[in-house]
Image (cartoon, rainbow, N blue to C red; front, side, top):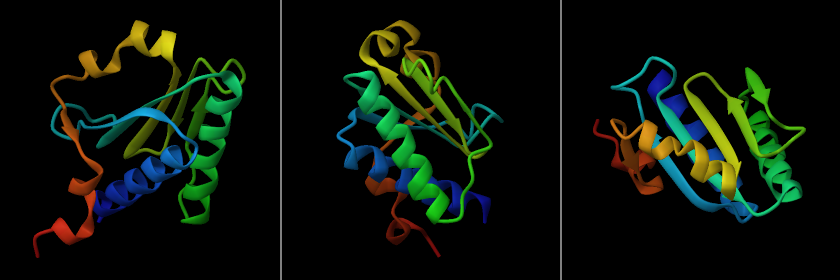
Length: 125
């Protein structure tokens, strides 16, 4: 059940980021390498206003679907906003900080996952 919720949250967050023109959205499945979460979503924005709008939209979309963020960090400065949903964590960066922190390299033991792979139609009964 938690796995399905994590997938749904990840799909919704991905679409919310795409709606706000997020750049280079990556989904990393970390469930086999960490107890922190099942999925990380990493995306970039081009400026502070866009980055905050992306974070706001993710929170709004997930809230409407019944999911509440446990914690949000970095909103005011908007160079790295982290939104923690428990089983899924969203990271929204400006391009400079994304390169600097390089979460894709740090979490390379996870599996990069496409949005299509999270589709319920691909679930085995």
